[in-house]
Length: 159
Length: 75
Image (cartoon, rainbow over all chains, first blue to last red; front, side, top):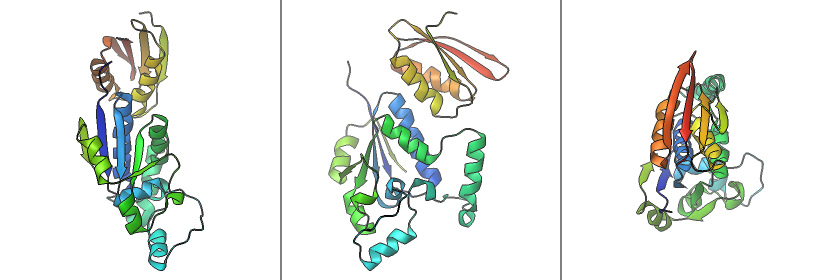
């Protein structure tokens, strides 16, 4: 069998719509039998946060960051027409009508399709995020690991 | 046309028809035919491209009352 093609995506944005685009492409590429890697950095890390209360040992700034950032994929805002939180409510309503998958469902589907989800450890430190508050079954790495995948990639995206 | 398996992807939006088709195709043997029913208007272009890339044979497609039917032979 010929070597698998590879799709690598950097998810930098923490917007619901942009993350949705990234995860739709990732799921499509997995259906194309590509090896798929999503490298989450900066605001994109919020897509991996668990939506459950956790008591973690954090400093003041880290606590502030944790409070101000969306706690998980479902809490993210839109990059356009967010209208202080009304936008996501409206788009979720429309998505339901059109039977489109929600972002949490797309992430679950990606994990089911063995898409490799990676969290950037350097930006985790900057934003004060700890492994315990991110989804199970993801990997932790830095720029070199991403580049090792990307240099052999057939599709590379920065979202 | 005789199919070995029928996949009902009606009402599903992108990327689900392609994800489901891939899963269904995995269960077939080479040379067997998969029949897919879908309502997503992008499904035809998506599945035709997917078949070509995966080495499958695009046999036929029909449309009736907004329901697309496709037949793909596993390559």
